[in-house]
Amino acid sequence: MKVTFIRPSMGPHRNSDAMEPLAFALLASYSPPFVEHKFYDNRIEDIPYDEETDLVAITVETYTARRAYEIATEYKKRGVKVVMGGYHPTFVPEESLLYADCIVSGDAEELWPKLIHDFRKGKLQKIYRSNNLSSLEGIRPDRSIFKGKRYAPIHLVQYGRGCRFNCDFCSIKTFYGSYLGQRPIKDVVREIEELRFKHIFIVDDNIFSYKKQAMEFFRALIPLNVRWSGQVSIDVTQDDELMDLMQKSGCLSVVVGFESLDIKSLIQMKKGWNLRYGTYTDAIKKFRDHGIMVYGTFVHGYDHDTLDSFKYNLEFALESKFYLANFNPLTPTPGAPLYDRLKKEGRLINDPWWLDPDFKYGQAQFMPKNMTPAELTEGCFKARTEFNSFSNIFKRSLDLKANFSSPYHAAMFLASNLISKREIRKKQGRDLADQDKSFFIQKPRSI
Image: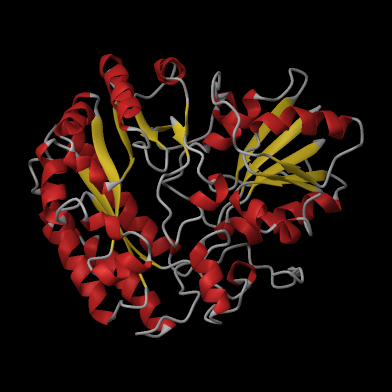
């Protein structure tokens, strides 16, 4: 039996910053021995639709939904069954089932063998539901499916799932509920030991769900001599022992969601705790004192944001000499409380915006209170491009505590910033699909 895995792109352009999609390596490891895999990543390569296959599996994010539906339609024209999984089908199953023969709701790994068995018997169900409570013990991603593909020299590794916070714009809590699971540290160590590259990105939404386990994890990383990056919450800077272990374990950079400098906006997004642990400036100093580069993220468009918010956030990011920064228009995606609230208030534009053939990447998808959608779109893009100007890249490189604290830090800083500068201009205003205007997108009544 032959199964084709597909990772959709956001459009016809090729990405220079693509990394291995870990989800498919996990799924492949759960396949029965008789299954032959083929994998195509549409971000870096074309899809050979006429290549023989028995079943196609597509992972779908909200931003790739329209492209995923186009891909599914091409395969179904050829009589091939299609299964979809990921956050988007989990939250809008009726929509996804207009294009897929079945969907997986929730984490797919342990459901995958049953789905394969049902397919071979001709009894494929419409929906396979996971409770997302399965044990994470014994996971061994099968990265052989990535052989020969050109990805960034960084491996994605997962230690845990779920998040203890419930931010307004995020759907993680909706997906996992109160579940906070970690893999056995010995399993993660074994996986890292087998990796080709010794720079890893820990994909957990928050590595610090449990302090004791996080410290044990970092101690286990020390003898592996790896460099790692990951997403963290700002409260970690209050624990000196934890920060020391992060540094000793090889932490190179962290992604921190600052989101806003306005306490009213932080409270509305249910992230007021960001300032509970001291000032942003103190927290950033802690990271820099430990040689850790900071990738700061901001969202714009909350009800207390104004046109001045772009200027304040940009100035703060430059003064803080962030390694990288992103200035995002607030994005209402299915599954997040934000989406439900804006929908109820009648503020969404062309809902569902992800199916709108005229929608472009970077555009505002709702009506802000203190600016127009066009001003929100332009303000974020201008902040991104200004932060990534050559003059500001140079000024930020002068940070000898973190960004240029070692040759490896310097190389990562320069490579990441040059790629970011290029990708920002290439992605802004891009279509979310191949944009064949004749391709008809159906909309279920519940959307």
